[in-house]
Length: 302
Image (cartoon, rainbow, N blue to C red; front, side, top):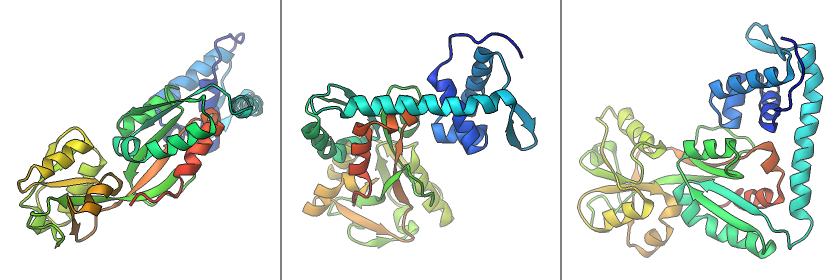
């Protein structure tokens, strides 16, 4: 593939190229960037078209750079590094910097965790505009990858993967009204099988965790009802009946402390939760992002 270099070279091209090289393949790069594998492949094809040369050669199961790819790599890293440096320097020059930090987060984090952390940022950078969008995990990753959000905060089941994206751990709680027969008890899957479950999103990770709990006991999947929001789940349980709720512990702290809602302990325990940060290399260098991530790292979620 030969030709002249065009002018439509973009940072996203270089970001994907460097990620593929550093992670060792399209699949790992896609996972790291929060993109689909097809998007990674299409971006590399677009980059090669823009440069007029091939960057990779087939090398069995791994990847191998052509001479053009080897030449491009240090320049790509330098450009991305300079971009991060520009963002960092412009954001830190003074407290009167006027900028916008956009965060995409799952509802329980945006509602019950972020307000206190964002208040700390406003105190340090009073002229910074802070915007929070509540989305589900897949939408959060897409938003960051598309440059619509500077930072994404996702809650996932704890699969034991520890890396720099992991900020802190939490837990899922099954709970009921104080008068519920299982309130304050330790319940088996058999005990839970007679109950309906309310949750904010019946198709997400929490639903999968509950299904696996029943599958491990050899029982049919529980009956679930999606009520749309965390507050909707709590109000649904408080309205009475035999249903139980399933939410992260940090979304229930006031109600559990006051005894308005009561935890139902389960045996075996449900899997834990992990709060992860989703960023791009450029946004990751921003002092605003670094400050918020630092404030969340190791935070006790309950």
